[in-house]
Image 1 (cartoon, one colour):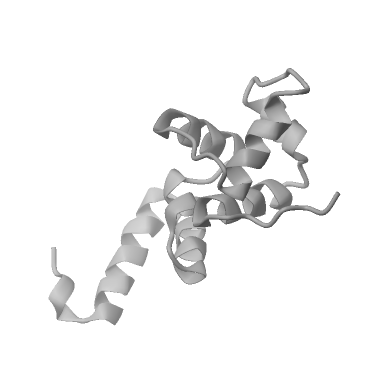
Image 2 (tube, one colour; image 1 turned 120 degrees about the vertical axis):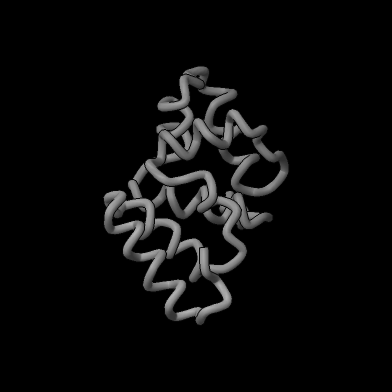
Length: 112
């Protein structure tokens, strides 16, 4: 059976995060506590293909299980998604420095 392509940004990013860890849909479902074979992996599949969208709590659980911020799933461009992942890995002091650099790059219109 052919693998169905993600039908949403959320689904595409969810699949990318899962695959970057080398996990199957069933393995991700298990980490979410969805251990029943006939419900866990199909639910993850429905999220990935865009057939269903997870509620906010489930999105947070998915993000936590995959070690990514929820914002990553909603990033509208690949560049923004990558920036979110990089920023999330920085310690707080480096996050503040990164924000300062970004503000400088963007110009004086973003003071604050």
